[in-house]
Image (cartoon, rainbow, N blue to C red; front, side):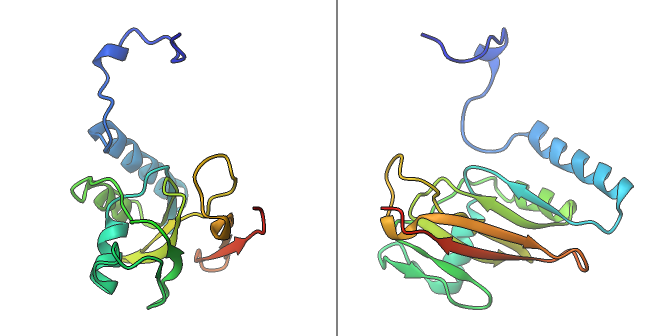
Amino acid sequence: MNLLPYNPDLADLQQTEGIFPDQLEWIRECGRKISAYAPDASSMMFMHIPPVEAYLTVRENYGDVCGKLPFIADRSGDMGIATEAIGGFDTHGQLMEAAEQVRCTGIFAGHQHKVAISTFYRGIRLTYGLKTGTGDYHDPAMLGTTKITIHETDDSFDVDYIFSDIA
């Protein structure tokens, strides 16, 4: 049974991980529209799989942590914990370049159910959110919600992990 919606061009679509030129253009176009309405406004991005820059930043600031789990991020405003190897998809810098062009201050992702780390890459906070449920693999100590508090006065924001006691 095919559960995908009907699309006559489905066979022609590229179905691989990464980011594509039309997606990058969409991000930039959204940035232009936001700037036309509110020139000083910053933006945030929310996606499923984080960019590889999250892993690269952790490696640069803490060394190769993949063999040193659990890993705790605790420097320069970083926070969080990982009990599995940190990954991400490689856009060869294109996503982060587009993010900088649209004044993005935060990128939020999930995908890895045992990673809840928030770190900075060139002024952009990269955050893996906490897993919210028990539907598949997880670490019971790493369930909860990721709270984002946006401050209206200066367009900044805080990220907090709120852990639950769901087993």
